[in-house]
Amino acid sequence: MKKLYILFLITATFANAQQINFTKTYFPGLYADVRGIAQTPDCGFLVAGLDKTSTDTVGDMYVMKIDANGNSQWKKYYGLPKEDGGNDIILCNDGGFIVSGHTNNLGDECDMYLIRGDVTGNTIWSKQLGGFYDDIAITSIEIPDGNFITLGNTENYGATNLDFMLARMDKNGNEIFVKTIGTEKRDFAKCMIRTSDNSLILGGSSYNNSTMEYSMTLIKCDLNGNILWTNNNYNSLESNGIYSILESPQHNLYCIGRKYSADNGMQGYVACLNLNGDVIWEKEFGSKLYDAFTDACILASGSIYCVGETCNFGDEQGDIMVVKMDYLGNFTAPHLYGTKNIKDEARTVVVCSDGGLVIGGQSNITAGTYEALVIKTGVWASGINDFTFSNSAVYAYPNPFSDKVNFSTYYDASSTKELKIFDAKGQVVCSHLFSQPFLKLELNMLQNGVYYYQVSDKGAILKSERMIKQ
Image (cartoon, helix red, strand yellow):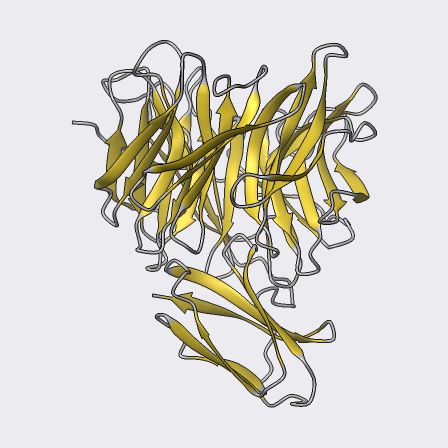
């Protein structure tokens, strides 16, 4: 039987740190990490990653359900005797989940490995995709028709070297299509979002064998995998990697990752682009030792929280940092989390229903070993609440809701207002224009969970508030 151990850490105290609700590590042993987190309707969390602490020392894909205080409620392992790892997890409309990862159970090379689970972690279906060489699933999304789209990396399926791989499955896991998308370079997929115009933005980096340099790569395609545009010619950016893509309420794209230069070393990096892939601005954060952003989330207000690692602002061993950024790329001072003289690494972040952040990663508690790490921070608001702007003339009901929700406004009923609904990562999942004082929506395509709605008039936000589907 595989056992779970929980260790409470003494968290490093910094003058600029937000309140921390809990910091916990799980699975002590050879190696364990958290690569994906999703909040559940009961305010708990599903976490997924790789665990090498069981009798299968090459590693297992796992999913663990924890409550709002970080206490384990159940855990499940998936896979066969060789290594299986989870790279991301999302909630599905029925309350279950899908984990994107890899398995090498059929040989020395990896296949894409997807697990569709129910609310208690039992497998509904599993899917392997791949050929003779490596294929790895990075992330998945569920689209309104109930299909799933998975982004990964492939050396098969007609790949010229290493390409993005896009697969679409129906709700039962039956394959609809598998496509390779890439350039003449070695393309490494890292992230994917569905945008407000119902397209996909695929992000990562490309390696040029001739110059031995990486550059940022973005590809826009429709939901059938047809390419709308490709751009990997961001030569001025010289970015080592893009790990997260967000869309702002103004429909700009924020590409978050890290950038290396001989003069400045590794730095956190953000580029703002329009939906055509044109660069509006780019910013770096940090100095010469080591700073890198590994994930980010965006609020309905437009504030962005970049999560990553730093050796400049805290321990030289490495601490987790959270940096708040406005829509123009202005950064606040970093808020640091971690344990003194221990290397802590962040891989993923989500916004919680209470306004805090949950960060997943790993902690080098003992030399040569890593444990899975989850940090729950306090509310990230300083005087002004980023999540809620209250206006009694605008309201949504019922809230919580099931499939239908009503929006009413008595604010200048003659004007056309815009409604946007954001998921917990800050991505727009629904938008409507309306001029009547009453709008009724059916939102049965949304999975259960926490959302935020924003009503604006001519760009001025009238109200921004949490809403819960259950």
